[in-house]
Length: 147
Image (tube, rainbow, N blue to C red; front, side):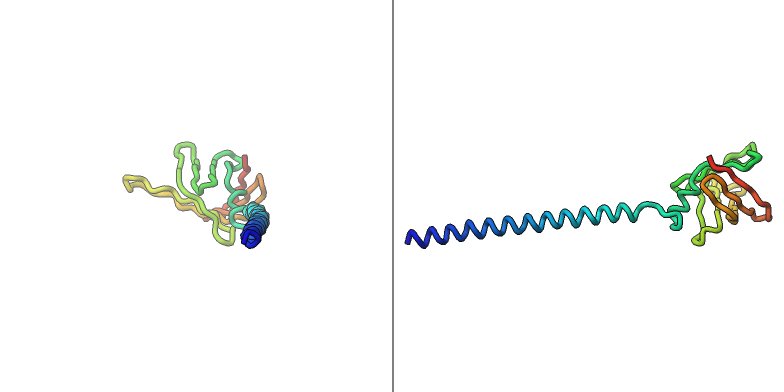
């Protein structure tokens, strides 16, 4: 009888040891898999200049034309602050078309609902990290320098 109890006790300890070692192996492989997935997701989230997010990062900065008469501060959150003449600062939202060829600037509506709101589109002709050439709605070419 004692021999049977010892055998059962030994088997239960052996099964416990095996189950503990196999679950830790699974846990280790799961941790490695999760670490690999995390590393891959970080790599995928890095902006690519061919993707819309990367292009928006390229545009999101302060721009002014060569004559310093137009100033635009395109912010990463899609808002902008602009000065198109020396008197008025305009606050609004900017966006880029899906084909990344049209830059749109839309002024926030005034709370009183009066006045004319800005709604301008520029056709992007050329874009680099520090220069942007656009064509306005009247056909005028403008060149902006980033800062």
